[in-house]
Image (tube, rainbow over all chains, first blue to last red; front, top):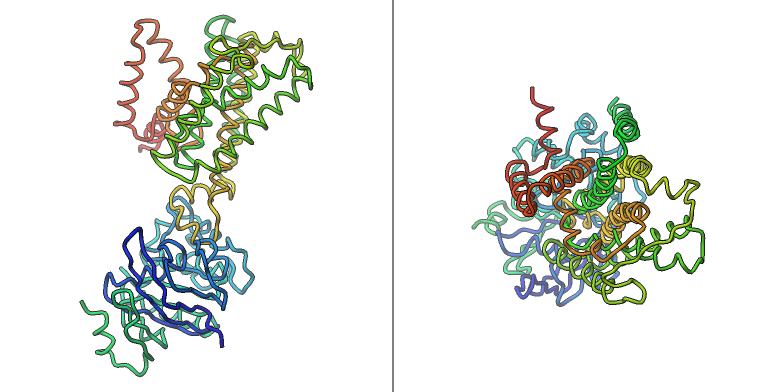
Length: 232
Length: 314
């Protein structure tokens, strides 16, 4: 089966600083994959290369078998990749509703629309006319995820989604991500919170100094082994 | 409720001009008011660019003068009725601004400012050196027909008639800016202004909306220029010099561009401050400078921001 996302010996840089040194991994359709690694090893650069923020200088990225020769932020989104970025990226001058509607930019067909996001997170409907940045951290994460779903993505990428969230909110996030997974959404999770990773991901890749150095099944790997990959 | 109040406000604003013109005796004051209204529409265009794109142009005066030059150059050829020529000049200016926008909005900050300055000064140089077409530093006088848009041209060249006309046009421009800001396109361009990369991540190509805003701001400035040409029947390179762009910027900053009507207020305040100070000293620019520093330091959102803050105090 052709993987939904395939990185083959990808090299990427910001200016002259090379961050990814031949990164290779695959995410199959319907899978839930985590990329683990310590701070500064290039996890976010994996996402930024897909969206053309980091410059692809070598190797190949394939989306549903098609090579992305010159990745651009809008081209990845139009090809069916939604990203919930680190820090959430809520647009400050827009209301909750407007933030959500912007997520439907790609006009891809699918099960997600404004009403369905409101059903998933009723609090977003209650606060639909409030400025997006007036929400609590947890609610902003709901908004960021809801906006990502509005694009009806084939692949949902989440970069450190649990950052700054209370454990109870992380629990709720895990429930929602598992629900999405059960409905067939492919998930790529970049995360250091093992509690979330263990509940959501099936497979993991470990990134170190811009290379994949380990991989495996979450269920077959002990917490101590996983912890070793993210401990400073 | 809020919408109804806004429409009521626009209606009241639209009525203020004709009412004022009725009570103010024809003469210098009305002439100044007419010219202040041109300045206010000019500032509205520049403020619109700041508000929707977050960029500061040092070359927008070029769009103030271009349609006037186009009309002055083409009018003697009698190719089309004046009304059509006016419309064509505006459309041409907007098309040129859109094409320029496609290049300049790719950069931000100082680079954007310098690019607009270079383009504006390039057009200024062309206006001063291409004497056969533009009249060089002497400028061009327009020989207008007797009627335009069904009105006697003489009426529009008198302070009373032009002030009323310009005021109504200004109100319509403000309504257009307000409606745009509330439309999905307006919200999108604000989102791009705040976090362009994030919006591109969502699947938008941000170049076209930014270029469209640049062109729309040029249209507002061009409308002001067209009114000025109609009133004065004269256009000269001074109208497109970068200092004219600088004045427009000062007006927009003085009034504050966070709300649509801020630059209009700035335009009127600047214009009358300039004339009041000019009556006492030749160094009136220093007074404007001090006022600008005071506003920039004490009221970063301009006079409009100050007024809103005062109104919302308990």
